[in-house]
Image (cartoon, rainbow, N blue to C red; front, side, top):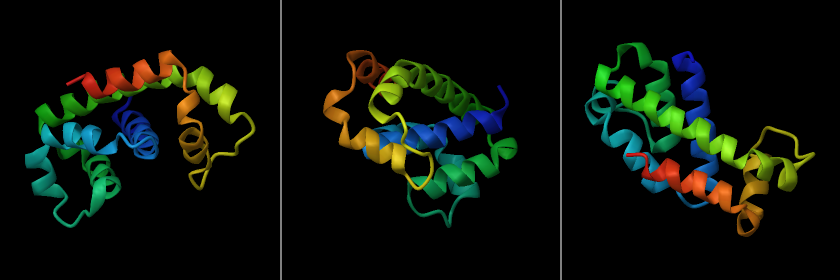
Amino acid sequence: MKPNKLMVQLVITVAMLMSLGLLSRSIAFAVGQCEGDVAAFCQGAEGPKQVLGCLKQNFGQLSPQCQMHISQLAEAVREAHQDCEQDLFMLCLGVPPGSGQIIQCLKLNKDYLSPECRAGIANLLMSR
């Protein structure tokens, strides 16, 4: 996978985690390994969305450690997405993408997420 695609998946998953109330742990994990890179390239970024956008924009200039970490996290994101694919189909079928509507759907249905999806999200958060 190309880094840009990995970062897009990461940003999508962060939005999902934000809606499910899991964002603070996942962002702390993602940024913790890239702290020096965030300080060097993203000083003006406010909030997790801007930080991730900044890391995406500067991916080629990030330290090898940060690039590797983001790639590993993106793989965990891909796996979590696979684990939640049925949930997205069953709970949010017909919800048009954009404007956070799918995220809102997941948030409204968080009590109905399958054990596989919940486990996928937990594995993502534990993939430190």
